[in-house]
Image 1 (cartoon, rainbow, N blue to C red):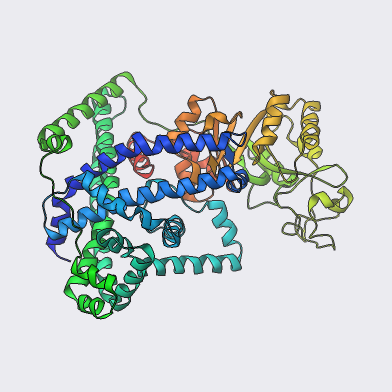
Image 2: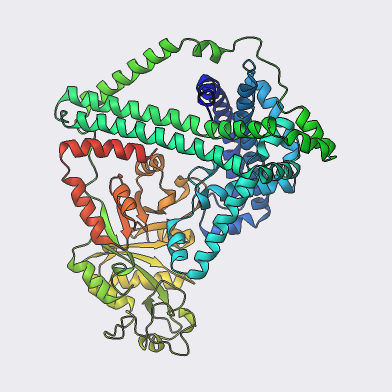
Length: 621
């Protein structure tokens, strides 16, 4: 790796940006609207406009769902060709030292591999891309895979089991291994126009013979860029810290400076996000050519007897017509100083308007409600009266509980399908599901400890304990039917607790039944995956898993009059992050910590508030 390596990338930055502007416009104007239209058409053909959680899987098993899956597969392939293909082609052209290529010509060249992707190799690549980033944290973040991650509640479940932890580790290492072995697959496919499986074979061959060289080169690139990033962020926040000590939000001029710096930071993050995938493709492409050109790989491929391989090594750069005249975007980009001036003026005017007409430009929501998960959290027996009483004693806002129906028609608290995990004693029926047990059998269980016995509470006892003391997020669990819903609503009505309870469920049909028949009750949909628009959910609360929280969606939901609750927020980073968002509530196994963080946010000094806002904006990009 040399100075020329970074110089070549910097020299071609404008080409990557121009290409992305053009392709993102094409995606926004053509691909995404078509995707939205077909998705809505296929989901509505099943009599529904939206699917969440388990219903998504059920939908995918229907004829409409299978058509949707095939369409989604094609859309993702198109994005792979447009994004990765374009970045690799521009990187290869930069390496060859050729003149700028026409962006439409780049697309035409790369779309030649579209038919080749419609096979087993293409399916494998898409599945691999969909798994690589969520599980390992590495890989290319395509638009359709952005925000895709393993939900925290799944990771917590995995952490609790040695067996699942080993399985997860094996998957992690396997994906990482495959990622290294097949790292040049797209370079072979895009540059040399060959089929996925053949490209994977060539990549495997190339990496196997050059492991140390490749790892050393990629490590040096990673280490250098990481150090540069850390230095830039450090210097920026050092500047912010200095400015924060002199600025005041009470002064209009100071507010203008703060907002202007925030916009500069946002613009910088957007530019970096625009260039992160191109830079990864550029690095891989450079290493690809270094190995192929400087080693004896050409001879190896040529002597292999593989005619395709022989043709490849003779023509390692894509053959695309160079641009013969400037396009509109080229002419615009040729006036870089004017663009810079216009952006600066726009940000300054925007900062002045925001600062003059808005006195509170930053600060955090002081009215986030704290929900104690399963009664209180980790330090107490879950879904127990003692846990609920502790939440009351600590003046928490809500408890979150799970309600199930017994064989003889009573309602008790428990999260799992059985009591095996939470019960200290293990009678012969411990493996049976709750709908197979009578209340008498359940009352014989001890969910406390060997030193302190605690019985499984009935819903009636819980409601009586909470009445006028604490609000309830009541989740309907397992084998829910209309009778169960009607019985529970009646219990709540008999105690005049309608305004004290939110009825929640993973199954939207349960909530729709309540909204249609008894709309005075507040309802909330719990979800960790969805398909369709928010407007089709007739509920009061959207209770979303951490990974589903998007800043843009928060504002959309607030505009629709829906309240947002995030679950299950347990790590210190997550507590800090979500306690600073404009949401209604946080469900956590550490409610005391959440309550403390919300209180600390409200007491921030002026300088700390300014710095925190910059950190928060950076974290949420």
